[in-house]
Image 1 (cartoon, helix red, strand yellow):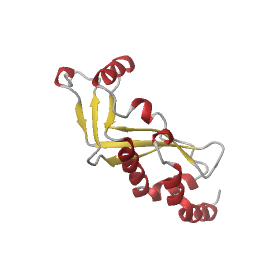
Image 2 (cartoon, helix red, strand yellow):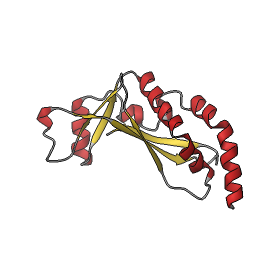
Image 3 (tube, one colour):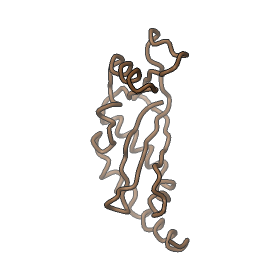
Image 4 (cartoon, rainbow, N blue to C red):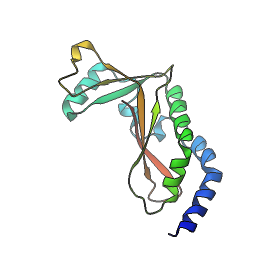
Length: 150
């Protein structure tokens, strides 16, 4: 792909990106395993999963529609880098964007680390990540693989 072709793709995607995001990512089922692992999970669930996977585990706390609205807002705030990611047909890597957790949504985590005493409860999270990959069947689409607080 030449730079001119890339620039044309960026301009074309810029014309439909916002509508695509708002119409596609309408509920938790469009955010990978978000609902299964990262929404309103209990402390027991988080501790067991952290112990089993030997890594930090987190969950959003709040109403699903408010969590989705916060995530969609973050995607739109990072629209230019995501447009450029979609436009670059040679980039097959996973892409991540970061956002700040905003009330009324909260985040909590259990760290797989000696520095976190689980008896003190979950740690509060201030930020979140959204992970994207290219849709293998549609060069103009992205798939969200996960979204989680940290």
